[in-house]
Amino acid sequence: MTQQVRTRFAPSPTGFVHVGSIRTALFQWLFARQTGGVFVLRIEDTDATREVEGAVQAIMDDLRWLNLLWDEGPDIGGKFGPYIQSQRLEKYKAAAEILLAHGAAYKCYCSKERLEALRAQQVQNKLPPGYDRCCRNLTPEQQAEKEKEGITPVVRFKTPLQGQTVVHDIILGDVTFNNNIVEDLVLMKSDGYPTYHLANIVDDHDMEITHVLRGEEWMSSTPCHIMLHNAMGYEVPQFAHLPMLLGSDHAKLGKRHGSTSIRQFREQGYLPEAMINFLALLGWSLDDKTEVISREDLVTHFSLERVSKTAAIFNYEKLQWMNGVYIRGLSIDELTEKVFPFMEKYLPPEIKRPLDIEYVRQIAPLIRERISTLKDAADYTGFFFLNELSYDAAMFTDKKMTAEVALTALKGAEAKLSALENFSTDLLETTLRHLAEELGIKAGQLFNPLRVATTARDAAPPLFETMAVLGKERCLKRIRAALVKLGGN
Ligand code: GLU
Image: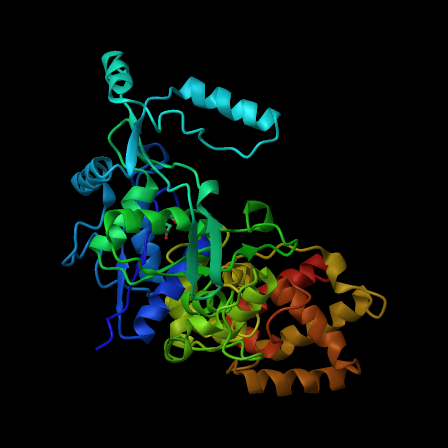
């Protein structure tokens, strides 16, 4: 029987989760689901100085929003809990004791000042940075001396200086490191907290993680992790380092490229399903052409073999396009429900709240083809709600259109529409087309001023549908206001 796959997402609670981390979580989740395995959520909060309040909750909220649900984690527990590292400190202390006892780690008494000076010197002499192993071979007497001085040591890994460590990476293949270039990393800090390296390998072992999937930026730590697993007598998990995410300028994806946290995308009205589809294609592909793939198909077809070795470009335009595709796939009821909170939040403040959801439902089909984020809905729909539209009378005229023609057109429309009993799209269309003929003007010469009068826009959702939703009363009121603006009343 082959071992059940166990993957973990191990974020540090330092703020809203970066989309790159979410891409990692997605691949971990997909791999677990694809293989019938287990997806674990573990919070790596051993660096108290970087912790941000509320971040753990935010991580869980965003994962839930994306429907990337975990099988074991801080809130639901599991057989290897607790899943928050600050609640597991005893385990790391015990591991550090074992390493010290086996001579695989040592106490380092170097002061911050010494380390800073060392670093400055290395920079000046253009040497690679790193600890010079000053305390690696202290005699027990020297150690006792330091202890007497009251220095609380850190614990460092005694990296084997000979030989090589090979990372058998599922994606990248074998990557070989000479051990002598691997630093003697700190495992336990002087505050009694473990570093990421120690806590990470202890937990990966304790939680029986079979596959460590993580961003390529962690590759440089991996030889040390493998040596640590070996020193502890643990079985080494399999590693798969995922390609980096870059901006369009091929620099590491960061704030200057645009939004980077998943929460920002959520707040701009990206749909979770679009985010999942888009992120899945950052470093993985089904074939050379398929762009739109459902979550179910991702689970069926995902494989680490098809993860690329080269960095992926985060293309914001493509994401926007893809979000539009998913928006167009929503039913009117779904879209109504989703745009409603965005319209409530972003429509101009003078519009009365709460909005009438039934009215929003009528508007939804008119914007579905036109918006690419839910937030866009607020930009498109203000005129549906405002009591008075503000626009410049110059909008009525252009090269082909004089104010007189606009006035004639709107006067004609006012008369005809007042007499209409029913404001259906079809009836509006036939009535207004007839009217243009009667007035001897081109359809556009009637429709354009009507569009400006009723929506204050020169391009809006389709005119007759829009007027039908606005209703007779609003339309007439707006046409009359336009007549005044044109000096006709
Ligand atoms: N805590 C690390 C992070 O914040 C986890 C890296 C890993 O997966 O080993 O990304």
